[in-house]
Length: 383
Image (cartoon, one colour):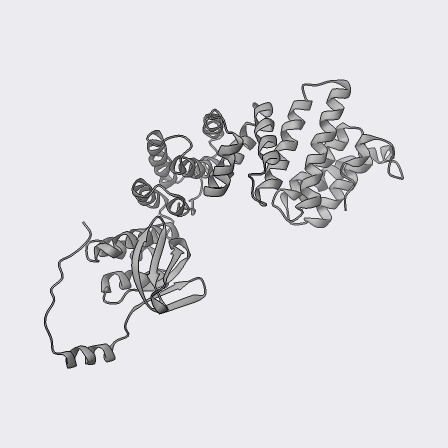
């Protein structure tokens, strides 16, 4: 139980002045590289810390951005902060736990947030998950959701398994579509991938996509919880071969109505191209060719307009594959060479090198100039 009884003594004014001169007054908070001194912490909730600075103005900052803090008169908490600063995360986690019963009610929530940070840095994924879920139960908002543990252990670690079990149990009580449920799903995605649990990953993705999304719900997710929309995109990627039509419809609705942020658009375009590519697999003749051309254009839009996005290398690689399906090997080789040149350190570059090497056996099939007058010549020419 947080909080404690405080005993106040009446002392002469001169003594108070002397004490004030002997020690620094006010709290200190370091956010990134910026340090706020002589401030007063006034509250901590919803993943935010609020403090009063110069001119009595309230300043609110995400708890996740706190690099270090010192609270006037709170020795137990300050000791934990010093341990965390020194890189002693395990000891810091214990110290924060002890401090919970020693700090004022005002600081209790902040101490719990900081203990979560220490547990995550220490790689104690199971205890960090338990702490995070406890905080999410009290404040199921985007601020607290953003504090979810990120340091997973190597595959096969018992702590990963315990974390998964905690999340699965918590997921059953979380309502679909809420920030809490989406945050839990996001973390489960990461753990299932780390543990190689492809069947569990597919089951989770299928359950998520079973909840239909509208343009309005996509807009709300994009604005209020970007990580939630990110999780839904991941689910689409997992299930795109089984639900290509649903995925394409949802993505096109989002792209046309405009709820996606700039960083989400290339991902949506990339998934759209993949969905069309899968749909083309069940088509024949001109219908198949037309669908492949549009898929290739989706991939090329990612590369052309969002070349710095994480999806750009894979999109250009996929544009090359589309051209192979269209019989345009010249454009395919061009696209793969562009991947190697522009994104040499990417996984897509390694895949492109393998495709180029495999294509050398068919070198005579490559024309000496770019073909013209065909739909396929529009796709993957490189930049």
